[in-house]
Image 1 (cartoon, helix red, strand yellow):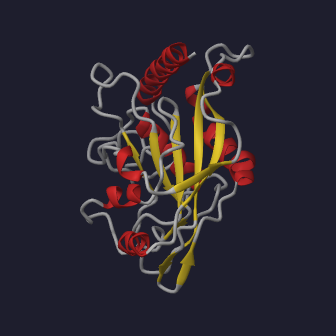
Image 2 (cartoon, rainbow, N blue to C red; image 1 turned 90 degrees about the vertical axis):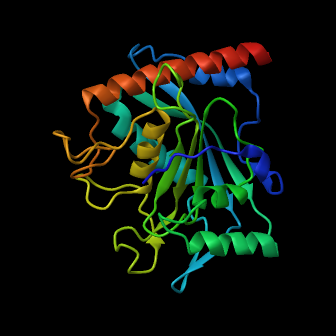
Image 3 (cartoon, rainbow, N blue to C red; image 1 turned 90 degrees about the horizontal axis):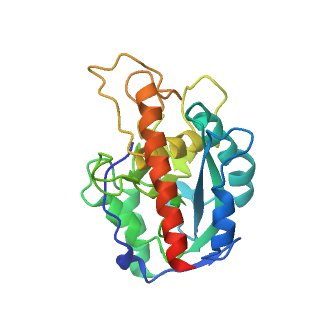
Amino acid sequence: MAYRFQTVLASCLLLLSSSITLAQGNHEDLLKLIDISSSDPEVIRIPIRFHLVQGATMEKKGVSMNMWISEMNVRDEIITEINRIWRPARITWVIESIREVHVPDTPNFVNHLKDITQSNRETPGRTKMIMKVIKTSHHHPVIHNLYFFPYIGETLQGFASFGGRLSIPDNPDGGTMCVVCAWTDKPSGARKPPHKFDLCEPLPFERGSVSRTCSHELGHNLLLQHPDKETQTITKRLMGGKQKGYGLTPDEVALARSVAYNRISTIKTWIAAHQ
């Protein structure tokens, strides 16, 4: 589901975006978001900025796909389900802001969208193609950024940046970038047209949802990897493998919490340097 990639922000300077809520650089509000919960001092609060990519209409097998996920969907359903999934790790994701990213209707842009629509898991440079049409001028430099994009390729539902290497000594605070689609054809193996990706899914896991994919990709940001299907003994896991589900192993919880603590430290250091 997720592919490692290096985010190149400088290649995304031609698109226009506007914000829905908080302004960039409100450091006092950001500090409040990461305050430890008094009811449970073990809970780690991680701020996240959501970006809704608007204006990227894509065509696939007779279906016209655009961004149908709304700010209300994020606030009322998606973040609640993400936090249900991450509750066993005592990690709470808190919304810093929700932004709209508007893209222009130009011939070059339209061609990029066609290339993305025709792509699959084996298409070289697929993630770079997607990043070319997403403006990142509202990308926060140190907190997590999650972009909702209409469609990212056949049977694909999301991807994430690990931010560098996959070990804490080499990459102590993980990555901060995810992209999740609003339309999917994964359940049919791309044999049927894409359909709107369910926001949430009643337990137990059967097909997946936008919220589960967000939770999975955020796990990658916290350096969690896909388990080895040949050797894994615990199944029904958020990070995939045999019998996908929502579970986190004790080792995954420990790693995610360590990276999350380091990310909070990075955020505080950044705030102190920019006050």
